[in-house]
Length: 192
Image 1 (spheres, rainbow, N blue to C red):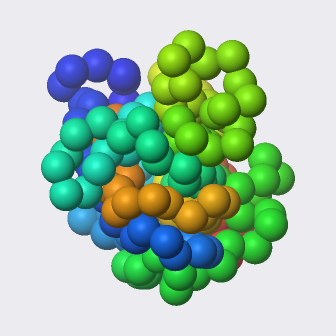
Image 2 (spheres, one colour):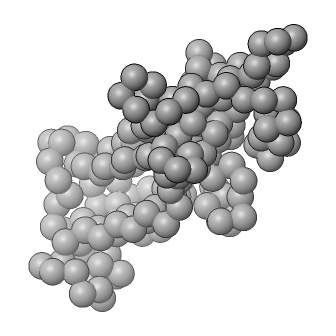
């Protein structure tokens, strides 16, 4: 598939990060309607190419941008085929390798620091604004191809949040056909 307006479409999901709660949570996005990892005869398998991931974080009660008194921080991202389901804040503790560059299931990942977090206060960010850095991301030239039936938006709280927040992601995707060798290689690497 080409990266064009005819083939590319959007999928999205969100998770609520509770206030004053440690550890992590998840929101699962079902992809089974877009993926068929089984090649049958002359029919090739189908995967979902993820070209870009757009994240946003906002206050849950008002939908407004982050309050300037927010002290929370977290690491968040997308894990292909993790199958975690929807997990509330505190119900999940990610292992240290979940967001590591060595994790073949990691589609995209980023950090969030509220304006009053230790990192944001120590940074050179103007006016103490929220800082975010996306350190893993797919691209138009080399998309991340998912061949499992789900992707999970996961987060691990570093500093507890002062108020409840909504973390959301929008994926820019396209269905693509895969030859058997590529399909087999992706199925092997996307094993939990």
